[in-house]
Structures are given as structure tokens and as C-alpha cells.
Image (spheres, each protein chain N blue to C red):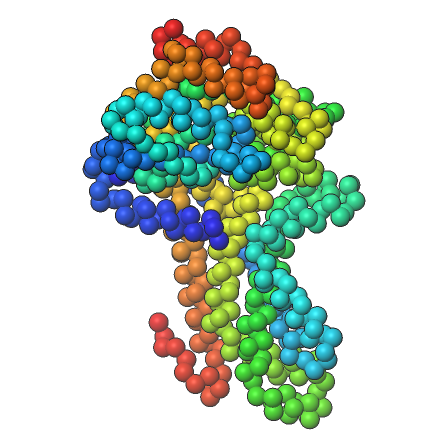
Length: 240
Length: 285
């Protein structure tokens, strides 16, 4: 293969600034989407374990509907499908104020919320039913039992798979470039446009994703050890 | 997901390509042994390369390869060859070339000095410039009316770059492909879509209601289209250029042009005398 690498394209011109901008957009998009996903995930995950059938049914519909359609379709749905339902004036205002970013955020958050809810449900269901019965017997309402007893335990049990989902969310934020969100992958393509150096630009993008994900994984491993419940979680991974 | 995959692929490529970097490319040898010339082209850029109503992959650029480049390459390798087509988009076309997935980019690629640092270009086979596609009656009549407006462009295209550098007052929205950008224009996410004039005419002609749209503005960029090849492969470039030269001299090129852009063609777009002179000047006429 006849290819001479020219890594200097990554720090000459505006490349560095673009990569930084892309990185910030990726982080902003992922962080907001993550908050939404976790909130929806906890809500739907908890509702799927309650006795009241209509609530369980509603949560199940949400999960199955949103996790079984590709993320790319959801991006198009929120960007192209939803705005026409709004009045023209609001549409114009949205399009002038970063509609693509918010559409991307909603797509990512709602989609991953459905996936995270399954992780949370498995955490809740791994707690013996007697815990819930004991808390109700002590006079707590169902809501209080979930908030004070069940969820605090469940959330500690599910740190490893939740980390997995969070990393997926971060990487999936690159799909937002299809609706013109200028995130990290978009910016690496931008550098390619200017320099015709695709391999260098994509390598820079890859390394940034890798470093980001590794940092998150490391932090989450610490969180996992810090909040493990002695006696309940038998084997905590050794300190890395 | 797809994009992340592309990033990883590029990394793998970067790692694997470091070792055999010394070998000179010899596309003709490769074609001689395989009997196949693989071109990277488009699926949604009528009339250059697109999937038509009968689900056939056709277009002006593809015809040029079939009728001008193919005979010339066949002559150079001394055997009959087949053309194989692969999809290549602006962000993927140079990597596809350098990793040997395709041998020739035959789509709508503008020949620019930066790109010439990575690839070689054939003779120019089409000449156009950037304009705007707008809803009929739009206040946008050209490049001077775009301040504060939302303008869609195709990511990786030369005109997006010009807008960003010279017209920062416009709100640029970049989409990975033409259908998404056009959808954004149809729905009002953007006020105009900018691309090479000829592609906008192609898009308008293929739209459900062509009369709802108009192409406006003078060319604000120069876009000579060439076919890209791996850099430094002089023998292959000579064979490709010989095909074009032959086409210009024999008039075969102008017949193909007429088939697609003539009065009865897919997209009537008469060749101006300036463009004709520009094309012929390349072969010293």
C-alpha cells in the first residue's frame, strides 16, 4: 500500500480546535442523553416490577418499542418526524436554536433509557421478594420501599452492565452526525475534507473515543468497589 | 454505530498499512490478473451515478468508465475486463482507494489541490460550480442573501468548506448524504441546500414535484470533476487519461454527454462553449 502518513495535519490549521469542539459536543450530547436515559431507565425498570398491571404494561411497551427500532431511525424520527407536528413558528425557532442537537439528545436518551431499564429491572429482580415484603410490613408505602430499600440496593448491583450501556451510549452519539450534529466523528470527517487525510483524522477520532471510554470504565470500576455492599455482593473485583 | 465502526476500520487500516508501505501501486498488474476494474461510485447522485427506477446502477460517470476508460484499460492489459461497482461517499472514497478496495473513483469528485496530495486525478470530465436549491419564491437568490439563513450542505463537499470560511454569517448544517439534506430542505429544517449546480438540477428533476424548486445564484466556486486514482500509479493514470483523450478526440465523449445532458437526455444541461473549450484545452486543442 502506497501511503505516506502525515500526522501533522492533526495539529496544524484548525484541526485541533475542531477536534476539541467535536469532543465537547460529544460529551455534552452524551451527558444530557445519559441523564435522560438513566431517569427513564429507573422509572421503566421499576415500573416493570410493580404489581399494578397497567403500569407494568405501559413500561413494557416503552421498552420493547424503543429498543427494537434502530437508533438511526430514532434520530430521523426526532429530527424529521416530530417538528412537522408543531406550529410553523415554533419549528422555525427550533431550527434556529439547535434542533438537531436536541433531536439527537432525545433519540439517544430515549433509546438507551429503554435498554438501561432492562439492566435495572434485572437488578431489582435479583433482590429477594422478602425484602420488599419486609419493608411494606414495616409500614413503608410501595413508593417508599422502592426509593429507600429496593433501588439503592439494585443500583449497586448493576454497576458493571450499566457501565457497559453508558459506554455504548457515548459511542452511539456518533450516529447524530446523520442529522448534522457536529460531534467528534463529524469533526474528524471535517478534517478529512480539508486535508484529504482520512486515515490520520479517523485515527485521531478513534484514540479520543478510546481514551474517553477507558476513563469512564476506570471511574466506574472505582464506583463499583466503593459502593459494593459487604456480604451482599460476594466477590468484588480486585483493585486494578 | 456505523461511524464508530468506520473509525475502527481506519485504525486497523492505519496499523496494517504501515508495514508494506514501500510497494509501488500497480493497478494495471492487478487488473490484468483479476480481470476486474473496481470503481467507487455513488448511488444517489443523478445523473452521474444513481440507482434508476428499474433498479439499475447507471449514470454519466459510469458510462464514461464503460465506454471510454474500459476499452483503454483493456488495451493496456491485453485482455477483456469487467467493471465492478462499489458505493463510495465523500468521506470514504479516498480511504477506499488507498486500501485497494477500489481502483478508480468515478462519481462526482472535485479535483482540488489538497486532494492531489493524496490521490491523482484523471483529465477533467465535467465542469460545474456551486449554487443553491430553494423552494420557488424563496428570498434567497444567491450567495449574497444567505446571511443568517440555515443552509444545508453535503459533508465532505468543497462548497461546505467555502461557506464556512467565507460566509460565516450563514448557519451551516452538514448532512452525510444528499437525500438527508434534501429532506431537511423539503421540511423546512433549512432554507436552502447548496451543492454543485449540476447536482442540484439532478435532484430537482428527480423530486416528486420538480416545479416547486429552483436552482439559484451564480457559481460561487469552481468544481472540475475528475476520476481519482492511487497516487503515483503513472501507468494506470496514462491508460485512464488515454481513454478520455480518445473520447474527446473521437467525439464519443460528447455523444455520452448528449445522452445524459442533451435536450432528450436524463437532465437537459447544454454544454456552454466555455466548458467545451476548457475540456478540449486539456488535450491541447
